[in-house]
Image (cartoon, rainbow, N blue to C red; front, side, top):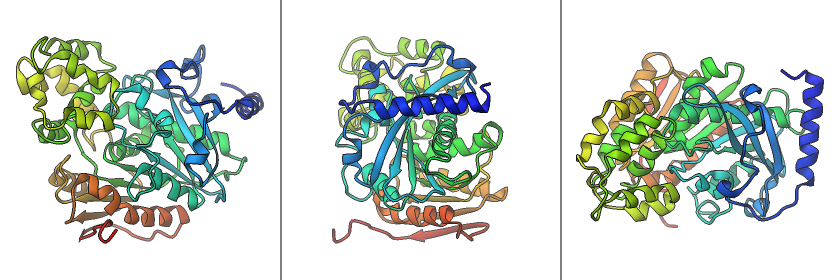
Length: 419
């Protein structure tokens, strides 16, 4: 391990190099040489910075409350507990509070590497200012003086739904960001919070489960989890046949098998080679962001792509991954206050699954505020639950949070009424 002096000099060199980097237009990760692991990266510690640059292009124009933004490439750990790497984008607010840091996990839900947030942040799907949009939530957080880290938590294989990979990458993105900014605008022991919606919530929850044994030194003040799906298997059964969110299964299965060649080979062997529902069409998911995949696969019966239909989900190779990588609560118990919000009529993951998760955590003493919105569905709740999440995050980051135990409350919020 580098001595502290050598490490400090190395970090300063990286920062100087980053500051000198020109602001050329961003390049898709699949074509950008920067998105590669340095030689011998495996010897680095989890969370150690491997490479830094100024975020290219006009990112601070798109997110006007940011004074600057950086891409950090760091060492992490994959689902096989082997060395891996990932990237995060860190925004520095214009008027910063040196003690508040938010890790914001976007629900990018895709097996397409070029849909990673560090690149997708530049696109129109991320930057609209309407409430509930990713751009709005990043901008609002920055306006409160919070540093905001947005990790590419799926990693370089676009491992959508591999919860262990996603959780590790989230924790290591926090480690890397705190290392970079400590003493450079950020206090030595800032308050840290997590926020995510949909799979961003699932990823945040996995990070909290894994944190106890993987990153016990991180002092996390709390997490806001919206629309948490609880299990890809449940989501698959709920959405794969004739719903607007049918695309979650092609992307989910390709991401789920991205680190298991035997399971991937089995999956490919089960795809129909010809006909309307053929392998080529299914595999289009490799090159579609969720915003492209949702309309492409909308209202299809995804099981028609497989020779034996839904039996593909019952194979032991796939079942093993479902249980190990996608079920909330499998790897541990969060040790921080949680604010969980979900629409009662959520059309991605059923509310009773979240009820069961909350009940299980409450039974072992987790501090939870659970709000169940009687209005709207999954997409609506991104805006409907936003203000409650921001209020919670402000309290935990500000040190004023005083809720204990478990509270479940029904609300009826329509944030777009009258808009």
